[in-house]
Image (cartoon, rainbow, N blue to C red; front, side, top):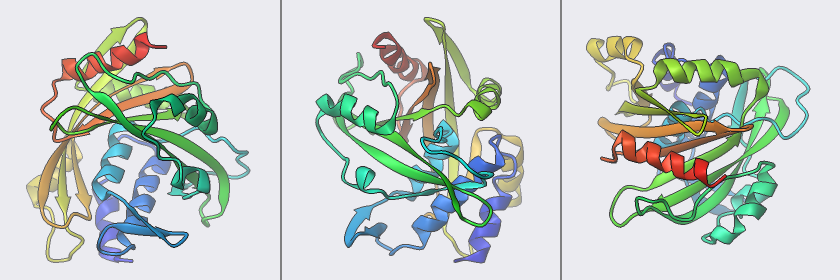
Length: 275
């Protein structure tokens, strides 16, 4: 494992307004991906599965990808790592009619649409398994989340991440949302939070590092993040809209998409109306 990568990544996450456990999940997940083959594949049960470092980092930061435990937690949770269970690895489907069955496996009641009013249409969905671990990497709980992918012509895809809200973090996360959000809208009693975040991606190399100005901005700008692990120095943008229905959190997210805040929050309204 690249110690420079670990130190640099932790240093540049210090000012992100998420809990220590959430930050640790991002680090653990990124380290896991970077330790795999250079082609970006993970070997699970002899089968190679494509992964995206960019998605892992941004999905966690933009959407608070923390799921309420479906198992019994017996110790203090210090981090989260992918479990790559059978249910998740073979779960991907292109049939929207499987939504209820998928939601049941995750253990949540889901509100979703097959097609949004702006033309984005359902493409596929899959389950992801996670395990919560203590400070010695012992499993203390297991949980799942549901990801739905939507497409519209040549426009960038939009991901809908659905997860159960953890009771002990609900108040904290709602406060973070209201402080950090670029825009907020209330629809049918539901608060929708919109964020447009800029990410500076850097290679995992001692020869490439952020400038002093970039480090300062990372400490003062709630919408600027430095992530380590890109193939080259690059800048990309993540737009997201998240909200909570009952005990379930929803996050619509897209990379380098010109979609407006109004359009993304209107998509959130489509989901709320479908409940």
